[in-house]
Image (cartoon, rainbow, N blue to C red; front, side):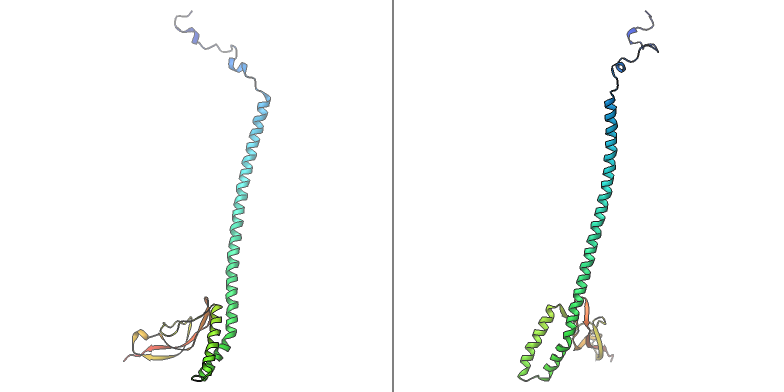
Length: 192
């Protein structure tokens, strides 16, 4: 026994001696290696399938958004077409309504006036159901988008400058579509 090493049992075995005792008990099973290979292949396929699923899901979301966008656009176009159609119907009725208004002026103060007023109110009620709105008139600021100035009237009050003073013929619109501008007389400031 060597006196320099107090614990002879902890000595490492010399190189070239017998193999590790744990390794001698373990012999790889070929079935385990096969199962590990199958597991790795299944994991790779699962990752591939998951990536493809994400891609398909993203494509599906994009198509749904495109379809929603198309539906919205078609809905807006249908609303515009409906507004145009109603405008055309109302425009076709303007001439009879204007003739009715002229007839009312001609029979003012007679027994026929009341009957014509009732017919006029029925016409206007039917046109309002189609969405007809009268353009603002007397007392509003002149707006060239909805008014047509046919004359000016001298005014001395600065607040009445460029204000509709009189409506010669009413203007109408349906929604945002102007059917006919109001023909108006506007105030023009006259300095003293």
